[in-house]
Amino acid sequence: MPVCYRHPGRESHIRCQRCERPICPDCMRDAAVGFQCPECVAEGARTQRSPRTSYGGLIPTNAGATSLVLIGINVVVWLVIQATGGAASRLVDLFALRPNGACASGGALYEVAAAQCADAAGQWLPGVVDGAYWQLVTTMFTQVGLTHLFFNVLNIYLLGPQLEAAFGRARYLALFFLSGLSGSAAVYWLSDEYSPTIGASGAVYGLLGAILIVVVRTRQPPQGMLLWIALGFGYSFLVPGISWQGHLGGFLGGLAVTALLAFAPRAQRVRVQWIGMGVIAVLIAAAVVVRTLQLS
Image (cartoon, rainbow, N blue to C red; front, top):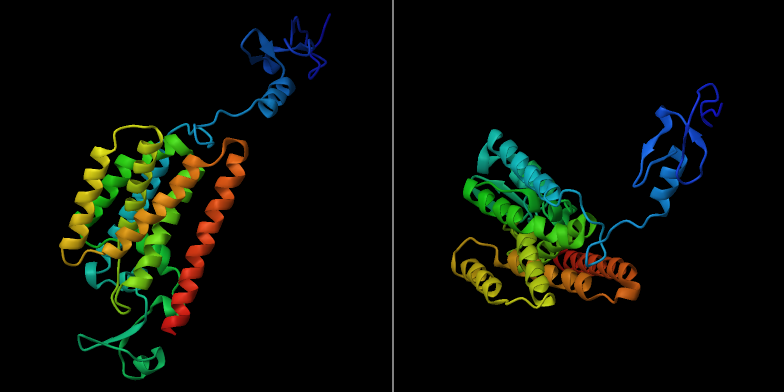
């Protein structure tokens, strides 16, 4: 009697469709035709090419999952801020992007060093110049007002799944964070050095720029997107208290990253895309370093 090649004590009358070795019911794996053994299934998975999107990324199993995680982070940070004092929460001082540190005392800000602020019993508000580089990232997930949070997460919910389906999860995350960091770098250079900036808007405007590039690349009519973007920038520049710097920087970053993803030559697409995004990250870091030296 034939026995299973993996379980010699078990009688087997079924053979693997690829290697023709006898297999028992515990070793049978469904295949397109008949059954295969575990080793042949594993070998097929290694040699089979994973499906890719039109721009070279792995096709995500759930194109909205990454956006939901990003939304969840924004919501959790907002809830923690509300639970610790809202706009007066110490977390806002730590997470907001402030180019230069300042001392808060008696309702006013003073341009003194951290040690002098402590001597005067003031509250030190750290800035990027003082080494608070985490603010370049945390500002992307920090909102205080409910309306501000709602519109940012709504845009991520509407735009994110489309871009993740087009580029794949890894490239979508790279697009999101590089856009957000580009917006942070623009705020660092163009905003008042003692004013804090918060919000995911830089990354959101990067997603808007990405959708525009995809529309142009696929030769769809761009008028609707251009109108949406124009209204967004009109709101940014005309309404007081809106960080047009972050919006502009994020939008330009999103355009640059997506142009790289969408127009990379097919022959060396993966290498060109990731090296190019690495160069963009280095340029953002260089801009931050130069601005730090200037403010120092």
